[in-house]
Image 1 (tube, rainbow, N blue to C red):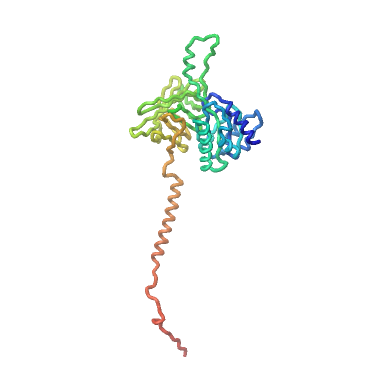
Image 2 (spheres, rainbow, N blue to C red):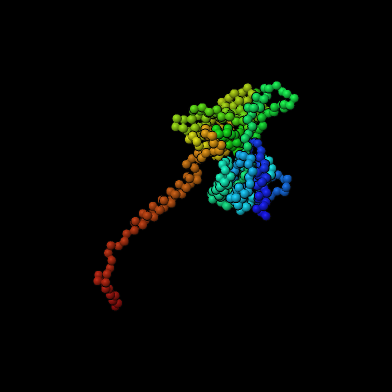
Length: 376
């Protein structure tokens, strides 16, 4: 009976497909023990609180994305079917999730499934079991979802210049997202757990702007030794654009140096204050303890808990990360201090043992003298 239910659900997963660039449903989730609490009645979508709790409590999340609309048949994925049946699982037929795991878990791995069905079947099982080996049984959440190609908005702008006809529809504003993943596909990614915070002087008054909504169209200006990641935001129905400037050294190390802010008639360049994010080309940079802070006169931009990578050479996910945590930290200093005390005590103990002197003469039966006690 359980196998029949799985085959029935897997058919539905193969029928549905959607065309947006974020995670699209339906969703099949398995692996984590808390999924038993996410069993929902029919036609009821998972709410934000349930999903955020699930994503937070999981030690790791592995997202498998199918980029095509071919039917996902249980007969073609026998290893995957067995993997799901061996774990707690749930099926969400909804189109989108109220929240996505990227904002609630730092150990999120996204795998785009390609190739033949047998290859995908083996890849899902192998990669999920690798994560279970690292994080433990029942601690890893697996998600099977979809990602289709996003609309190229250049066509919308060209269509806006044409004369309207009786069947044409007036162009609308480009859609925005309320997540904090800024991706120029195959070129650069900026990820942060909170919205960037911009303090800016407008009309002789300071304003604090939380950049919550960003355009889907993000571009990357690529040059030989410098580049810019261009992200557009919507603030009070007005466009604001941030341009993050990167430089590439002769030793193929990239660094983030400044950000340019464009808002209404204001054009300002904010240099980075503090240590620059630096990593070799082909690596990302991750920091959760120190924010990115750009400042020029009164204006400043702050980004907390971030990961960033330019010049991605066609890849769509982060490479191995360089971290901002230095070698000398409080735990390391505490360990060195305790180790020094223990080594000192050991050294004193060795000196004490070496200072012990044994007698160089021993009495024998021949050399032993007889003594008499005379009492009067």
